[in-house]
Image (cartoon, rainbow, N blue to C red; front, side, top):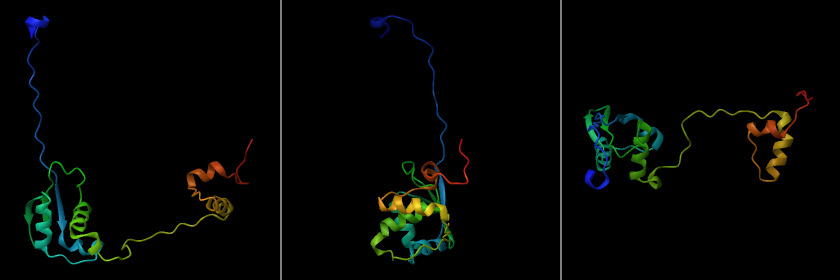
Length: 143
């Protein structure tokens, strides 16, 4: 190449990356039934996850530790594994139930109701962030 283009060759630089180990995620068998509402055998859980490319690092009666494949950037925690189990088991086979988490209801200030009703009548859903832009309260001093 130097004969054709001319110039001078620089020093050879070797770039070597550090091999990073694959991430590991632990799945406790007792946590699977709560969000899914179904009982799954430990062997079934293991088989599904192995078929998806996860490598079993350790498996005992309480939990299974898995090595996540390098191409699965979407799996980083136990909830991701449970989601994969639901996907393969079939969402249509998972019973329809209410969520088990707590729901915290926040009230709407009385002063916001007329603006919200007006917005809702036009199909507009107003969030608190834009309430302040669209609504001028009597308590706010203006110049």
